[in-house]
Picture 1 (cartoon, rainbow, N blue to C red):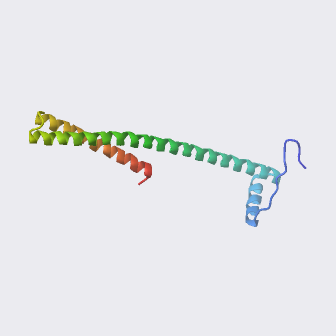
Picture 2 (picture 1 turned 120 degrees about the vertical axis):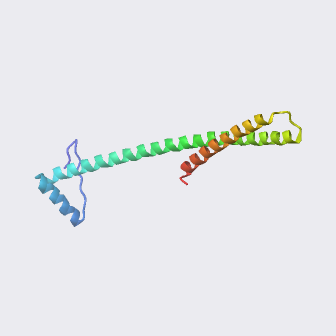
Picture 3 (picture 1 turned 45 degrees about the vertical axis):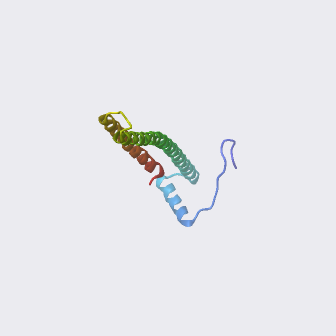
Length: 136
């Protein structure tokens, strides 16, 4: 017995669920059909909202993971370049003391300090971003 815009829905439920359904219906003074319609509608609305929220959370998580991945790559690259710079300047420092380089000591010290600082800052940032990304 369905009309063009409505369909029949039926099913079996446990006794305790049936009791809860009857209480719901009696508290509101509505027919079984109205109670079923309202419960199905509210249940579907809640399920759709929950599904939409889960999709939004997944999108947010994906965006955060992409951001962390970009930061790990960028900061790791800078940290590697800084480490290479420190190693190169250390070799120049050694060459200076051996008498092979004509670069003032203060220049080498200043450049090594700057490169080492960049390595520590960006290396620490890359490590922190990697820890966040891997949830370590």
